[in-house]
Length: 296
View (cartoon, rainbow, N blue to C red):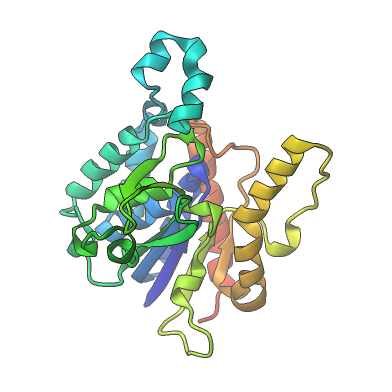
């Protein structure tokens, strides 16, 4: 049976998706359309390209994810300039290593641009902080940046969607106003874009299977705000979680498998093999339990 799949953001914790995909394949489910945000965009693009759970497991267990963390040369030469450069570059690490790796992975399956997929097959979310807009790749590319959507790189879009603010240096693209737009992680505005496959007052074309690296809406805990740093953290958390969680709780809770991944940081790119296997097992266990009760 075909379903529409949606992957949330979550940094390296997205390795749990591999285990979830194992369970999905065992259930005999395939994907008609795919969507994701941040690390979820990377997995959505790899699944869309044709990678199986077994292939992804082998690839990621061998992958040294710390290779994605590369400082600009001047930052290496003069460590004390690291925080000064952050002000001007808007991020600590280059995003090119992620993009280059993903480009090679997709090319191995014959995928380069969105034109290599059927129309509407793959969507991902980015945030244009210059235009103050949520961007849906590839739908908004032509309108916002005067670029033919079918010619836009899938690896580029997924990398933009995964550009954690201040951690990775953001991409810049000339927009329709002929100025440079700064684009960052789509999780700022929608970390779990299940709404891409729903339309108000319209019957769904097929079941939606969402995979979310978090607890349920009801489990979002209150935070004390005692200072400026707490305020910033709370604003960021609210932006990442509240909108999507409210949408899920009201309409699609039964179509979302929640995969708690506590204990592992989203930016732990030095994650060891043992922790990788733990995440994969978490995803498999939670997905198997969910799919036993899943009705469609």
